[in-house]
Length: 312
Image (tube, rainbow, N blue to C red; front, side, top):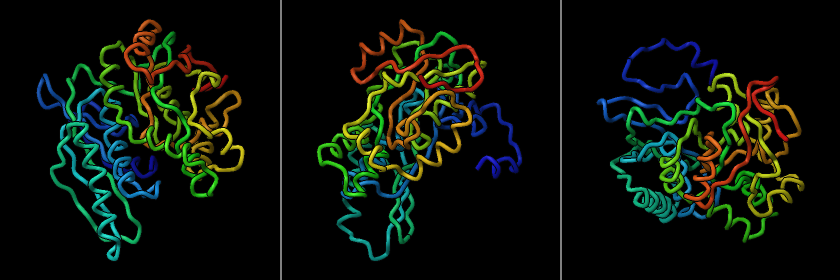
């Protein structure tokens, strides 16, 4: 994709506060001195068997990029691909699951687009608002900051274990609970703290998104403290049994050249509707942990070393 984008004609508009050039989570377009739009789009194929749950996960995942920018979702357009001979009851459940999460987010679904396709796909284009001076980008991490994360890792490994018939029902349920949990409350807590950089951890995995944060920041290396990472139930067992998604291997190939230290599979695992990764002062990290029960420290930011990322 970087190669394709490199050939596009460049646009300049001072109202574009964040565009695609910085690999950020969403675009930001200023409307007035007090208001900017946050715009993002995301859709994917089913990762669970239940259509209602799939709709919920797709909605939560689509909303996440707005929260990662410090924004408030306000409206959404659905994106749907569905087989011509697909079950209508299943389609209703997908749409119902998505609508429930949009209602929870107070985000109005105002339309959408659908096509016939052999493989189902679903998601949303979401628009949010944010004050132009309060946008949280993935760049801005400072040496001395603490890294805070808000969800447990391993949704990709659990989904792969499910496909292989290895996953326990209780472990799948825990993963689904994580994926259907909006980042709304985490964002609300984050906005009460001083945050220097933020991104949500999704398809590129923890190290992939941490790499983007380090690259977008000025002269820093992100240190991941493996012992602090919180994993979903069963993840370590399933990874050892070979339940490794293809996306994990792709992430490793892309990122490992910028990683020093031994990084296990879960650090490259592609997440769906993952948590918020923040860089903030240590005192603010403690505040974030008090404000949001799911937040925990899992690393630190240091002055630039040989690579963008270090794993301890």
